[in-house]
Image (cartoon, rainbow over all chains, first blue to last red):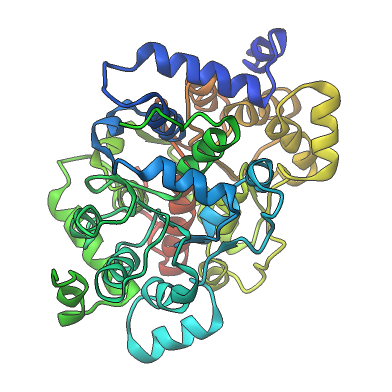
Length: 229
Length: 229
């Protein structure tokens, strides 16, 4: 019988936070040269950690005020809107509450499985993700808005910014896929809102979660100040 | 004021399922040559759809009986164990219930946020994901077991297979990251259990979810039969 690899782990056991810091050390060591600011790198490094792949770092774009604006919003316990329930499940309440004790289970909103949204989607034959953003409209001003899934939801967010003057504290634009994804991401960068975008087809809910967790660490540590470009 | 891209979408609107089938058509068109069976390709194609990236297809490995075994398990409404709550949030109950009406909210189990597991993790200084698999031990025989996050959980799963004779219907081995990931995935392929592995550092909860959803489609359509290697 082969000896399980688990015994190698148990010979030098690590807890969850230790595995995370060892992972970050490996990423720092292996990462190619880049010109992210220290605060931006904390975000990008956690994104790399989340997908196990350095190649995404070439495609991450920050608007100049993105981190400062997001950290201010987190410190004011602003609403977080997510385009998927996977994002809601992935965000750590404990991390949010370290930034502001006012964060609770109702602070992260996702309407994609909302009954009213489902009914409207059937009636209109439009994606639920789009109707979910429309339902969230009253919450979006000043909020941190996360797209890790649905490009059409991001298109609607962009429309609300362009036409209706909604101004989120940050748009995290990381929807994934093959239809309407590229143009939804390109458009974000033209609307004037603070953004963090992963260009191209790649994206995903864990990336959106990793951005929020990195921003929480920055907000907790006060590390965002004076380190933006 | 720039005209929002949303109006291009609304000029030729698509609902969610239409966006999905158009995405699959684009993937079929752009994908390089491969030697997956038709059933395996349905799984790999949905994985590509989930990450927006073709490069993962070189790293997906199926054991010969993987799809048949998983489809049988789904048709018998076997338990699904997940190493993250993001996976649990991402799996569609509706898709499961199309395969077997016995699937319900208790059918997908994840113990990583369990109170007992958290207490044991503090006492032992080991990762919660590992202790969560230990707690799940009585459920794992015959189950579909999904790893999209925690390599140490997969190491413990492998140990249970090797040392204690636990035999899941399928192990989906897609933990992600930089510490213990490669050896956890390599080990799965030596244990004799049915597996679908994404080799290398990449992985993630959405990939594990995409595998289950593809298997549901195969189980519903009866497409797995006679199409395995």
